[in-house]
Image 1 (tube, helix red, strand yellow):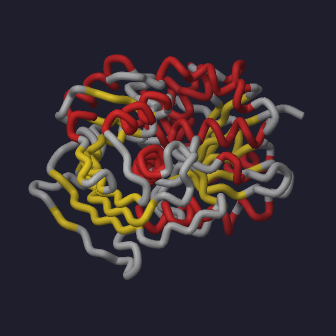
Image 2 (cartoon, one colour):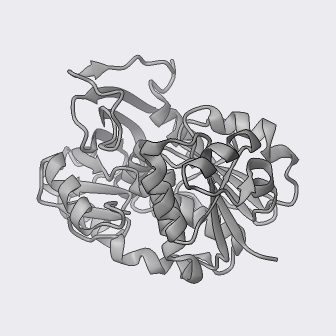
Length: 356
């Protein structure tokens, strides 16, 4: 059977994901990459044609087909056909649309091996973040999976590395508090920019924002219940990168040398002497894949502080949506072949930076 990976949506995650899958499809064991776009627009024609030139095939609804053709973009499949002929479907649509698509299309597509949703699609399926809970994946059983948001990736990576000793101290975390300083919008977006810092509500009575809530459920998949997680969010008037401020309270005392060793030994975390988001963002633009750093987080290690050996405080940068892209590729490759996905993912190692 042909191994087809289908991406729904061509936004800030969908577009680079399509490019990445096309570029490495042979190494990842993919035969064909297809993607769905809903609306034909002249402003999007250049990127759609670029994806077609990379070898991907376009799908859209029956109603939109003539519109795409008039603009010189020929769809190969209608929306439902593209889904049903796929091996894996990755939904990169805006918040809430993935859950709607699950009801309308995915539940009935019984021949598809697996479906993956992105970000704010709580309840879509088992939560996943590369390097955090791979051991929770069950071949032949997990079919609906939810790649958590880029900030939740960052938050979980900080907990696992600094509080849990890269997994060697599973019961070490007492509590964790995070402030997610979010960029206003992506550099590719015109709408949604914040002219000044905007603080967010603590919508979740127990966890504050969805970031800590999602991290709680992510760790639950591996049998860990970290109930004292809390997160807050503020949107900054910047388009560069999300920044995270964290404070962890741990049981077993640690040292700065030990923390830095843990960071260095985890190839999904990058250290940096840079302390501004624009410098880290610029590095990703110049040296990343599609401008993306694929590490889970970038830590300006000189900001780390330890009080009494048990209170760890610091800052880190969320590498755009690079961590979500990595997890999307990882889970898709796992769905196609759970026995070889680790080996195949090594093709992406050049974009796991030890230092930024």
